[in-house]
Amino acid sequence: MDLPILKTLFDEEIDRRAVSALKTHAMVLGEGGENLFAAGVADMDFKAPPVVLEAMQKRLAHGVFGYETVPEGLLPALTAWLKTRHGWPVKKANILRAPNVLNILAIAASLFTGEDDGIIVQPPVFFDFYDIAKENNRTIVANPLILKDGGYTMDFDGLEKLAADPANRMIFLCNPHNPVGRVWTRDELQRLGDICARHNVLVVSDEIHGDITFKGHAYTPFAALGAEYADNAISCISPAKSFNIASCCSAFTIISNDARRKAFQVENSRLTVNKNNAFASVAMEAAYASGGSWLAAVLNYLEDNLALVRQRVKHIPGVELIEPEGTFLLWLDFRNLGLSPDDLTSFLRTKAQWAITRGPAFGTEGEGFARLNIACTKTRLASALDHLCDAIMKTDRIQQEKTS
Image 1 (cartoon, one colour):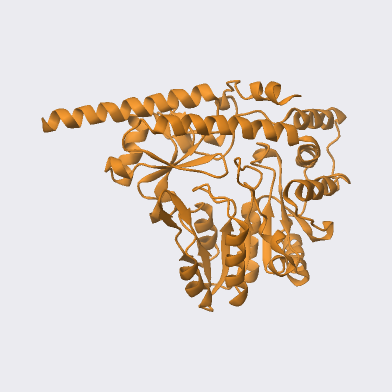
Image 2: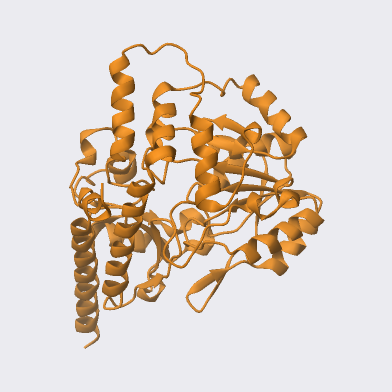
């Protein structure tokens, strides 16, 4: 399909409540949340690529779902995708399967750090990083990002000091970064990698959003920086975000270091997490082999949605957009509204009818912020922005009346 034709696919309103979608489930929306703008959970409201649906339908029609091996075409499709789109030549022998990216992070923490060892994170950052460290009895060590002039950068001086502590043995890198939307540059990644190598800190890089970047910004896989960087890295990738197949795909662990990869293989076997799902396999192979045009159309649609938010936020007092470079998640700054974290959540929910992700979920550095998912129809997004604008304007009028 041509790009304009594909783009029309994303205007279709699909009832996520018709299935057990986490985004619209009561455990996320809470009691009485049925009519809220559900934009918290990080998935898209778009159907999977037609090539993926066709591949899964063909597999379903076969009718036999016994035990299967990895299809011969899956890893070649993955390696071709990484090399062609991201300039990252990966050997098939260095790739392991995993149920999901979080599983990779948890196993890496368990294998390559000891109890109470420090795992460095760069908040505000993906909340599951905290949970994984805590559930594995590791210590969270914060190296907060620096917010200046409306954008975030890494605190390399702070990282150097933390990495020099022998108790801190690992860093969870988010590349691209969720929730602030930074697509780290090659120079930034090299600087981080050099610091970590000097102090024997292992880089475990969550790169699940790698395919979702905006014009002018290119994703650099950390391990693609060079052999010496790859030797000190565990890369976590998955097509879950790129093709909106989170509930029917798995993930891949890419490890160049032989000893670490063998240790991972042994642990995968011990935990029996190395089994194959027929639908996940065909979905991922079809996505990587033939999903490029669909992804291009999604990125184009997301660019339009971003432009809509950018234009509308300019006219909403008390709200600022942290300009994103990638992901379909926007980091909004509500600090000028002067609300506490709980009051901000209540305001967005009860006044604006928004159910988005609370900033403090990403660390204390997220207080006053919230994460918005824009991978929805333009019509729904525009309506949500109307509700936000009306809620803030009404609140401003009430405040002015009280002080007059």
